[in-house]
Structures are given as C-alpha cells and as structure tokens.
Length: 205
Ligand SMILES: [Zn+2]
Image (cartoon, rainbow, N blue to C red; front, side, top):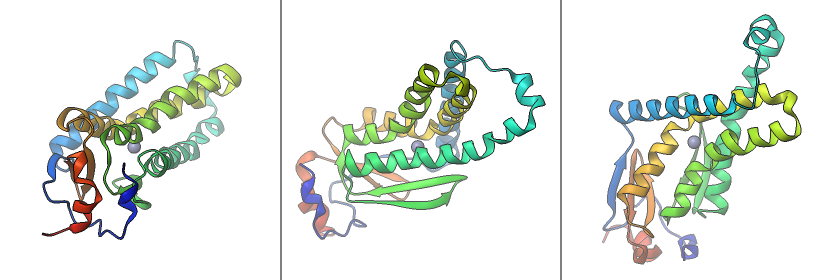
C-alpha cells in the first residue's frame, strides 16, 4: 500500500489536503510529555521493584558500580533511537530514515514519508515496550544478578518515552484509522489513505 512512496518524491513538500493534528513544540506540550514520562517512570519503578530487588546503599557505597550506570544511560538513549529507526525502516517503511544526532538533550532519529497510522504508533511505542518491559523480563529470567541495571534502564527509558507516548496518543485519537501520517518541523499531519504517493509527489498544485 505504501510501496509507491519510494518514487522520486520531494518529501519536503506537504501533500495537498494534509490535516495538521499535532504540534509538539511549545512549553505546554513539553510539560505534558515530561509529566507523562515521570508517570511512566514511576509506574515502571513500582512495577519492577516487585520482582527486582535493588540495594540503594550498595549503589551509594560502591561508586564503581554506580558509575557504570553513566555509559549504560548513554547506551540506553542510543538503543532507544535505533529501535525507532529499525521500526521506521522495516515496519512503517518510511521513505527516509536518518540519525539526526544530538538534539534537545538526546540522540534523535528522524523519518520522513507517509506511513500508516497504526504502524507509526508501533514505531513510536516500540522502544518503550522493548526496553522498559521486554528487556527487564528477559534479564529477570536469565541473568537476575543484572536486575538492578535492567531496572535503571527500564525506568530511565520510560522517563525518555513521554514524548513518544504523547505522539502515539495524538495519532490514535486525532487521526482516523487507516490514515497516512507524516510530519515536518514540529507539526504532524495526516492525509486519507487514498491520497497515496501521487498527491505526496505532486507537491504544490
Ligand atoms: Zn522515543
């Protein structure tokens, strides 16, 4: 359905009839994303501490162990973005996926090209699901001695996923099912599924 997006389109052009459904710039949206991240992190911490026992005093007294969390945190941010990139390329099948680099305090992956709303939501939520739920579950089952690192990654990944959850919620509640979505700058928009690549390629009338 979206294979024909791989033509020689100028993806900087917004398709005709595009409906902007979300603008994630501005302090209100940033504050909402931060609150969602904090809520997700608290829920993640409370949930995982039922099965992962950490000794806070051990971390305070053992500086060497605590310092290992610095590269773990940087690695987590990178892996989070790589998961977005893999899903953007192989699930959403966005026409262009690239590593933007350091932006707004974190590493950012960008994707461009109309994709199915449902796949876009998967692309947004995949790092949250994989790093805050699937990965700790695997660690608890197979290498429980590293549970404290898994808990750290799960909680800080949840904290970093506030914007993703917010974008996914906006796509699910403000776009019709089966719509094609994309964005430029801080704005996200949708077009009817029937718009296809011809409209996207046409650019200005
Ligand atoms: Zn993300």
